[in-house]
Image (cartoon, rainbow, N blue to C red):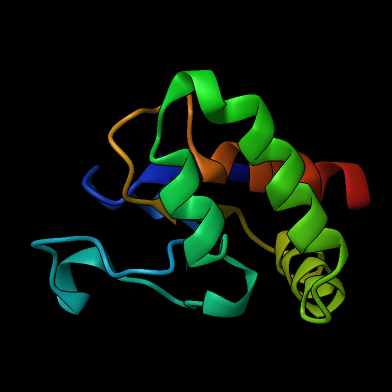
Length: 118
């Protein structure tokens, strides 16, 4: 199962393999507390589109288009998709993000992107 979860939520055994999908480390969390298995910064949204979006719901549609464009043109995307798919054969995979908004964030976009490309 592929799922998403805020970095500030408790770690659970059902999380399985935990992937941090933020370009920046979540504020106030230690490595021990966050318990991340992988941090592929190259797959995260660029600083440019992240700052432009600034987690504003009204800009989300444009952000989705920009992030999809980046993913489609990122040479690391195919390896990322393959690794996540392989991991999911034996365990849950959880995409970890730090944004406050649980309904408007890049992890949702990445999860949907992955599901379309499996």
